[in-house]
Amino acid sequence: MSTYLEAIGRLREDLVQANYFVDPVLEAISDQGQLGLERNHTVAATRALAGREDGLATLIRLFVLQQSQDSEVVNTVLKANELVDLGILACEGNQYKALVDIRPYADETDGTSGWVVSDHTATLDTKQGRTASNHVLGISPASVSLAGITPRRPVGHALDLGTGCGIQSLHLARQADHVTATDLNPRALTLATLTFALNELEVTTRLGSLYDPVHQESFDLITTNPPFVISPTIGPRLTYRETDYPCDDLMKTVVQGASPRLNTNGTLHVIGNWAHIEGRSWQERITEWIPQGCDAFIVQREVLDIYEYIEIWLADAGLRGQLTYLENYEQWLNYFDELKIEAVGMGWITMIKSGSPTPRVICEHWPHPSGTNLADDLMAHLTVMDYQSWSQEKILEKPWVLAPGTVQETIGNPGEEDPTHIILRRRDGLYRATQVSTALGAILGACDGDLGLGQIIHAVASILDTDPARMITEVLPEITSLISQTWLKPGVEDSQPL
Ligand SMILES: C[S@@+](CC[C@H](N)C(=O)[O-])C[C@H]1O[C@@H](n2cnc3c(N)ncnc32)[C@H](O)[C@@H]1O
Image (cartoon, rainbow, N blue to C red):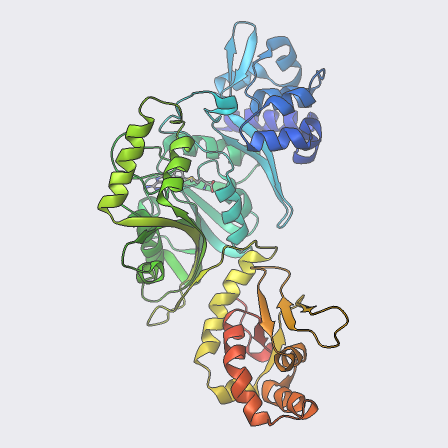
């Protein structure tokens, strides 16, 4: 083990020496090169590197662009023989090629940075490569999205379920005393172990399905981007995206299995798909997944029609252009017909082991862009559930604080004194916006945690020369709804940050 760690240590030193970090790489391949790579094309990045023979260019060509390099050149940057022994490089004549993708990663929201090891994509530059069933996916949009919805509060023990290339553990290691990373795919654990060693992280790795490898252990935080693709349970499977569970049962099993493994106030964060079944609301189905003793906030980010969904995932498997394409398409459609799947939702589940006797669940379709502090905003939706049981008297008696950073936009005809619409807009989290009346805008604007809500309403009613009791009747339902959307938090003594 020490020889392994020593060899990885030398690789790390070589990456540092060549300045193989996010910003220098982006600068070297240019914006167009980066956009090309996001479209799975290397041409722009290759042209941006033309004429460069330095170490940074060599590493990018080897590990990102999948281009073989002369052994002489590689030996000036890396201890190539050692990396052949580790399965990172392969020698072909007088050239070396990389057997894995190693790329720098940085997320300035929590300061995570390092390198991530994964398999090379099989379809770069429209190559008709067949993705291996044990393929280890690199950093995907879903990985980045999951990292963004996972809160970064300090925790004791965190679980990265289905670690893949290890990207979530890279984040978790900054906030948890101890991180456990699991995967069903042995190759994923091999590459995740490389990621952890390269970043000098101590992460416990366990092989096995879902919660099997963690037995009776319990966690303060579980985060997972599981293999959530809903596909026919026939033929070869791609372990990174699908399982033998029918329909969206994998997601349900992940959610329900978390409850016995979460400590009190421990949280689960999942990104994934759920089926829209004919004759049932998606909210009703997903709400049934939430186990006793837990509360959840479920956000549906988008809904794909079945044709678009199938086309996306057939392309992902590299099946576009294959002779069997239409046959595979038809099989998939038949499977959806059998299960009465009309559409597929994509979204986030944030669940807490609150101990509440009956699960409290909020489901929301929110397809709009989101901003910074997203994870904290999602968590706040769990906290506000407590205030929903408060009586009208208690809500009026309490001082409340309007979400920091809220701005007001007014819309009206040019030259007119009064606006026709007043919009309050949040500038972080879910980027919520709400239209308010002049009175409600004035009341919310005065919510700074000082005066009780009832006192504020009386003062505004007096300014607008209105009956305060009537104003309470008018604005309280809206204020209650704004509380449930985290626009308002109780003043200091009642707020309970998780
Ligand atoms: C979509 S990838 C996510 C990888 C990584 N966590 C991320 O955020 O990018 C799903 C991972 O789950 C693993 N996996 C598949 N089936 C599993 C199972 N039954 N139990 C645990 N992990 C599984 C796959 O091997 C793969 O690494």
